[in-house]
Image (cartoon, rainbow, N blue to C red; front, side, top):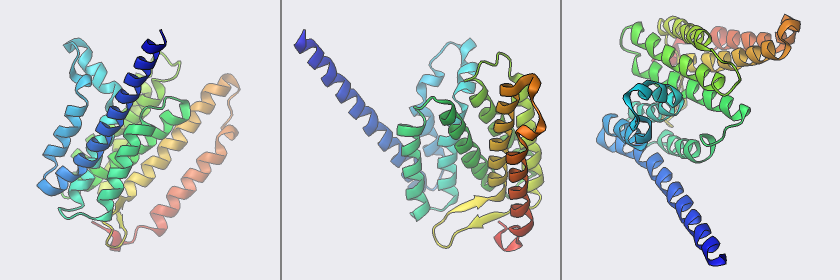
Length: 260
């Protein structure tokens, strides 16, 4: 019996080590293949292949499976796109993206607490809107709005799916529409903050929508917690702080020098 337990533990340790190693390889190659090939196609294919379990279901469950894993897909594809638009020469941003994606795969993604779900959603919002803003900067506003809708829908659904809420379709669609409207407005004057020669580019829209997503979730939780006793004063602090922060960003940090 002791030998069986020892063998089982050994297999578990070996399996965990292989899992960690493969995720590190995925994080590295998703970025490096994109940079050295000068195309995001191979990187995106690599991300999709690594998520083969999402697609290995019967057709009637496929859409539900994709929606349940949208946040993970958004993070992976966004890392590839940001790597691609940063250029075909290795820069500090590429190593940051590798570290961030490995951290996501090994630490952040497996967590399932309420705070972790919110953090996962906010990361998906920030990276997803950053990637979509940069990728659609030179085209019409419609693609930016559509991609923002998907990000907003996925982030909202990711949080609500972990709660006791039975039907959250309307809430997720409203959140997606708000994201689309904000992305459309920001597209008219696309501001991207750059940081020297690091290759780091942070779109203003990504910051605004990440703040909005946090405040929105806080307000939703307060409404659920207090229900009939809910008063606006229960959320006025975070709401006013979020509005003030967005106002400062829009008014004081929209200098055209940062424009794409």
